[in-house]
Image (cartoon, helix red, strand yellow):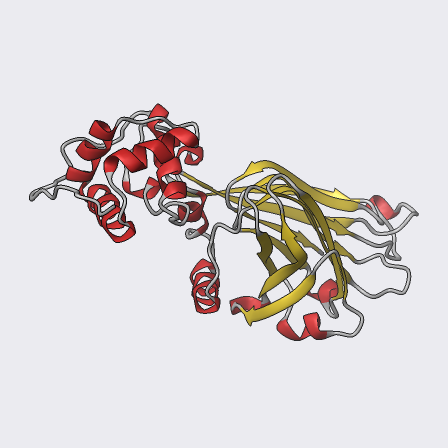
Length: 312
């Protein structure tokens, strides 16, 4: 059935939302009654009259209770996360009431990662929930070689999800190393990002069913990591729990005041998260750590963030 969606001049505030909703309904051939039925089936019932008001610009969603409806609209209309949510001014104080895609765009290197994603023809919303993400640099491996670990526990939020994008603080050629080890997935396309990082397409063995879980583990050598004295983890997609670690080795020398037992490490942790007002940076001077110590950062309910661990 062809949609009949009224237009209106002089939309004012909220006009971009109204225009985007109206144009999408027309292009999809969906009318208000049909869309209301689709919303009801997702658990976000909304009347055709309300949808008509929103599409004409006569009113717009403002309350927090409307957020779920706007997100459901994106789902029903097969839009990316944020294509509608980011166009309304929901009355809220934190980013959890806006799209994660908008938050991720404020991170460093986000533009380059976004350009690569679009060139590869991938959706930003990959349909995979990151329940646990561990990004670790092991500088205390038995053979003395630095190893980068990237471990993820995923749950499919929709059927057919089969790949994700990851930003790794590793040069492009390191992922082609014969010593790289990947369990639970294959590495697909890759793109070099500024500063020596790499955007990686991680492809699961098969598409997941809705609610199905998957675990992937990546380990690759990272020559020269010790000398750089700096390790960064990147989170451009939401994660329930994100852990960043650096395993520091024993080093010879005397401790404070000449005490025996090895020279301690001087370390620093900097966490940058995205909030409604923009990018927030929390810098923590952890001070000295004993030899063979674990430098760690743990973040819960991450929307978009970076974590920088430094040592000397």
